[in-house]
Length: 184
Image (cartoon, rainbow, N blue to C red; front, side):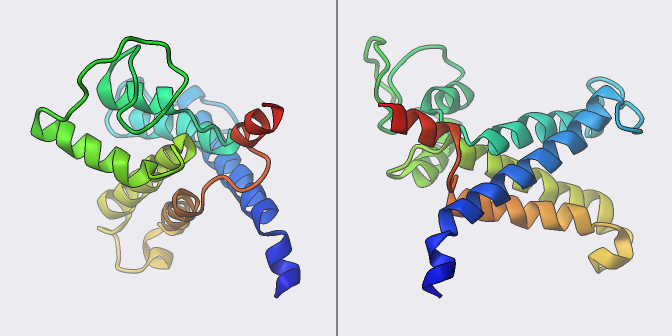
């Protein structure tokens, strides 16, 4: 088993890259009407938004970006500031970032739970992709039949659990985050 464990980070990295690429191309095909897929109408719920999540989320997972500033912008809707979750390197003025509303508290809890020690942008993207596929499975496929093989939801179920695994395990090897850390 030590032989398999020796390449664990590399295998996780390859898995992340392949799953992210497949998901991004699946979304881009529908978003832009390429690769033999019909283009979805802009801003139509849920197809256009799902394609956007697939394209952007898949690309973020594929490159393995760990960006605390990007996550802060998404959670807080701000351009500058110090992250409440320990991200360093931002030379913005300090401000009070304690959660004030129930929505801010929820965002704070989610960010703290996922951000403990690692500040993972890829993990947020993977969790969003996983949730979008769970939503797709239960809202589109589950109505047809109980099992994925019966209702055509195999891809949704596989993507859901693949991204959940990436969210838990992290980037693995060969990510932008690792390359940036190695260059310092």
